[in-house]
Length: 183
Ligand SMILES: Cc1cc2nc3c(=O)[nH]c(=O)nc-3n(C[C@H](O)[C@H](O)[C@H](O)COP(=O)(O)O)c2cc1C
Image (cartoon, rainbow, N blue to C red; front, side, top):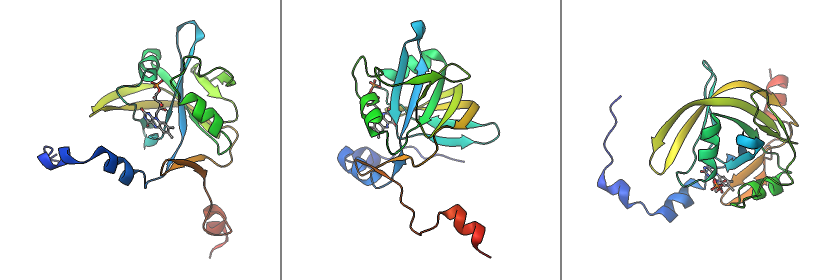
């Protein structure tokens, strides 16, 4: 596939408009965690988490180059992605802050690879660092999945147009129930 060089017009896109338009797309909310030396936990909230490959099992997220937490996670060489639940907005707000002690008061245990699993998360994905690609003012970080589990299950926290919310199905039955009953 041939990639085109960026045209001068792409540089003219106003950052505010970029955020506003892209904010029309909802994301889930995850906390990427790692354990540093002396068992100090590091964490960053991301809306950019996605699955990337089934074979081999890969996932990805996009840390900002200015993130103070990303270098700590990179240094650990492994991380756990915690999918937050709709009732974990407070955990999200605390861990998205720049406070030095932001992990204080957040209960966790260690994953099989040794990264923090946050209590009451919907699910977790335990990875080691597979690749880091440059992407403008962000990186694309690819993790190789070693283990994963539904923890609490339930509704995920959703971020949309700058606000937190939760998923509401359009029909009375969920998509899974609908496909099971349709003929
Ligand atoms: C809903 C939500 C989604 C976010 N998504 C990302 C993301 O995908 N990548 C990123 O670098 N920061 C993201 N952030 C910002 C980080 O969580 C955090 O505020 C930032 O990394 C600053 O903390 P740090 O310097 O300790 O890393 C998001 C924040 C929120 C509230």
